[in-house]
Length: 179
Image 1 (cartoon, one colour):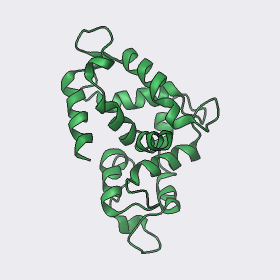
Image 2: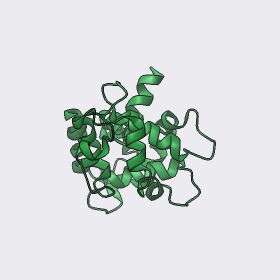
Image 3: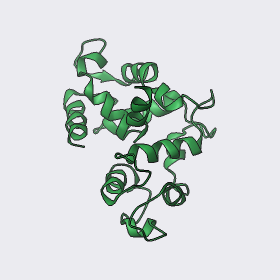
Image 4: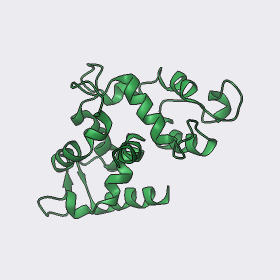
């Protein structure tokens, strides 16, 4: 169960994390019942219930860069075969990496030409981006539980108003049920 939860959560920093979160009801996150999920409500619940899936073996200060990329790769690898297919890569690219990478084609990343992206190929292309450092807000080389929770919250807060509406919640819920 814990390995399944860890794989589901790790992905995508969010893809996996937000997929599990989306399975819970909006009302479970809206603690004050005002029909909005404030940042504090979200980060409190996220850090209490979901961060540990990322940080089982992590340094107490947070998630280190190598661990972050390993878990992100594992989350994209939805069939668990140790490779990213074109479809798995495109989900990650479209959701996470298009702001960081110019090329979305697997062929650009697939250095050995086997049609799949292994972890080393993935790491080589994503390591030099700002993906990790954009989440590591205090630049201490660790992603804390609050940095991760805020990053996920910001991905869901489409209109950047600091709260999640039921519409924003449902948009993610529908997206992740389709994956």
